[in-house]
Image (cartoon, rainbow over all chains, first blue to last red; front, side):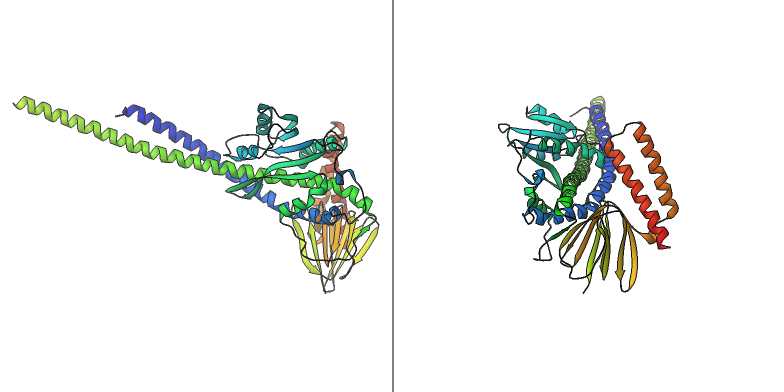
Length: 288
Length: 137
């Protein structure tokens, strides 16, 4: 039978852990709410941008822009959106599992410390790493995406994909690899957003003042905004995953504390019974 | 026949209703959109967007953006939009002053150009709000 004192000490430590994970769960829950709202609110904007560009990507217009053509180099670049901190369940692990294997020559730009650690640990090529604080502003997202655009334009990389945990609901986040540049992959983005053109209009599409002007302004905006929307979704996923992970941890700790309390009571009961037995035996021996 | 007008900003879907006519402030001048308009993608500059609904004219202040007209749906995508009924002149002026102050500081401290750009957009939108409101009175 375990020592009473030891069990008591374990119960105390498990309960302390439960308290901490519970606090973390509550913090994550409130952040999750905000992050989810923000991610959902920015969805119509990203959808509409993609919808406006959809006919253009199908080659309706005779117009060339570096973003629309396959890059000069055949090197792939993946922007990996992870988290800065751990304790968010299998979120990052699931993400890293989708990465192409090490034999392939892929350059990585990471957002979030966890991804930077993983990429350098597995000796993949890390070209830039950024951190992902909770208040990640669009200006910060632009630094990341402008870095990628720059590399794409000067030809050191030929395509840019983004790997991020897409938010499905609080319990489900799916790793998703979305091609961002060149924009030929836009129809896949549309699919992933679930956008279909509901009204069909087969008349010729017009541009005012001209397709060139519209596209030169619209394409960079689209790439930046799309990327920012993904960052926001990744944030919502992170907080959801953390909330769920912390809730599980709290539940487990409470279960453990319960079963330890049971053990403790049993041990206490056994000790008392033992004592009574000893006293009774001693008295019986004296009477004889 | 009606048109469906959607105005979407990065933060929210500001407007989504069936209307009769839309007047868009494009970079090449104001254009009026009626049902049956040819498919068109155009660039919008900051200014007032007019909506005629059952003979009633409503004005909205919008920032720079793009508009897509496709099969009787007018989709406007812009950085910011507000109904001029909801514009509070004092707060728009205050916002402008705050943004100008921040911009001045940012230029002194050599802040990242993106931040500067964001502040300039704020000032631009605050100005548009004031102009639209004063005109609407």
